[in-house]
Image (cartoon, rainbow, N blue to C red; front, side, top):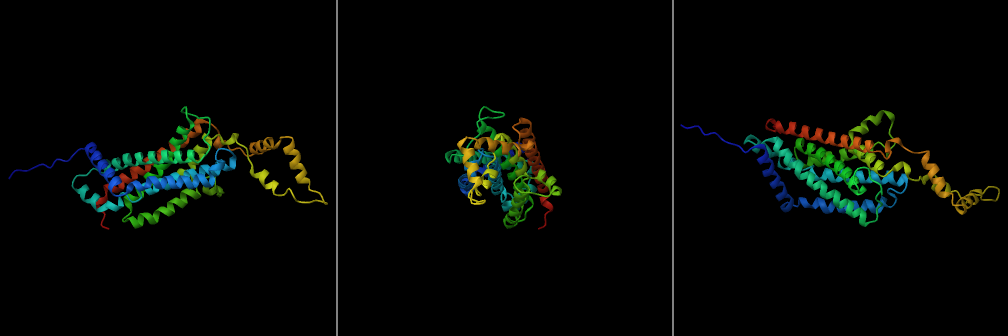
Length: 314
């Protein structure tokens, strides 16, 4: 009897075959819904905290934290169910000659395109809603492009983390159960928005929010912005009477009549500057490198886990 050798398509060919499959799923299995969802989330965040973004220190810190959260949320929802929902199919096709590296590569390309679209949508929504965009840029002629690169890297990093979770989760229910825990970790360990004990600060290096928030603050020249929280807190005491007089009210009137308010706000800001948010390209590049590094770690881990999918007896 003659022996017939079964020939399998190469890795590149398999990558494009599965990439086509993913785009068909995007059209016919309602995966496109993540795009309007990202527009809605961006609109809500811009409405809530966009008014003071890149206008004051406090507004910038809160706004960049919110923007990072948008990216994390979008990235998680993009791929948290992508692999686990077809785990049985992947196992069968791997035994039939599927290269796991090609399978993951197709997801990487597809998710990268999806993340770019989400970032474009987010920036468009923010622009329409009047969110301030920094005038100065560090790398490209347009600061919105620099910020878009940062938003993409945050989203893509979160996306690949979710893909890793999807590669070892048995069911979509398990994956969706893990996702809130990861989201809470990303939010709590952002490194700036919440006061953490010193012992916990090294853990912030593990999160995309820390590096995304830092890059966005640096790109917005955080240290050159005024600080208004002290002024606003003191303003609440303007009607306090001391021996029948209102000394704070008189002081505020004097400051405003002499146009010294902005000077005081900048003096307050100078005492609260953060070197980590300096308008320096090296800081942003460092953040980008960390985001890319974690992305690659998640991808490599996903490939390794899926290579052993045949031994999965669950």
